[in-house]
Length: 455
Image (cartoon, rainbow, N blue to C red; front, side):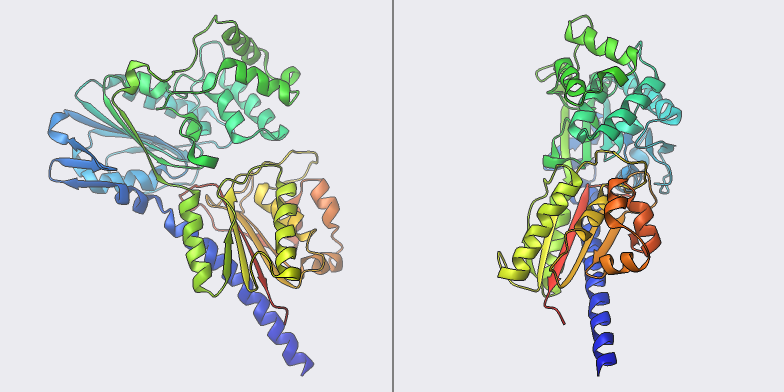
């Protein structure tokens, strides 16, 4: 009887873990880039309709397809299927390995999250094509997460190496993606509305797969086709806030300070003429993924609490908060009864203090495992929708009520691994990394917590 009960408990635990993965995958399917493009874009004869706005293709002598981001390739394939040979030419840049099969558009691969020379060469070509556009050109620009790092085109006086070092410093100090992109915009010819300036007087349509909290258009890929609401003064304040000014390359600091003093021009602002012929459309976002995840969790029999698609903050603190809600459900049946599913999205940050390897989702799972005291049947899955968590080959990690005991039996100290920011090393030894490979989409992270009646 005891053996049968043990087998039953193991089977239920396996089922919970599979449910968490099933719910995550449902979220992914909802933000598949090609489907998202085709939902927003339709072509009937010579009329291309994008999010309700009609374009008569007979009015254009050429159609250029440009793009950058982890999801740019399947987005481009969807546009090729829609417009076919009407596309004159185009270039997109993707993270290494995030490929697809295209007929009319060149795919280039480059580094992310730290930009590299291939990214700079791709950005130069995309910028050249934009400059070649005239008032009889329709430019379709495809933007998704990762676009900022993949489009490095430094301003005069700043080198690619300067931008690489600045990016590394900002990533390691805990700066948010909004803050990092504020800096990127002010060091770039193509970001912060720069692409819109280059393409004018062409008609420019930007289709966007959002990877930022709140779908802030001037933050997604650093807003190449939208007005920039930030300033050089904001850049200086960010460096000061994180106390990194002494670490920032001198050419970068010199350029930012020149901007604050008004000696170099600001990024493109609202009201400038080249924004008059632009349409920006968000075709999919983290919230879309969460809605699909909620529907799947409901179908699996869970009572669902969808917290927010806009969760930010220090990863381990966010994990502690989520597990506090799980304990409330466990002990008080509030705010909903078991079996329960807590869902959230957004993008947290990790302040690096150790020398380990990992990402924000793996660190979330490790911090959650440290906060499972008193919980019975629970599973936590945190993963990036792009399939890459930090500089690792994992999308995230999965933990349950057995993680702490299994770690102890293997001689692994959870707190020590967390202190060393070595979540990848921890989960790699336990076999609890969640690996999807490149998903060719990117709408930030999904976190799934399932709480059931203990067997």
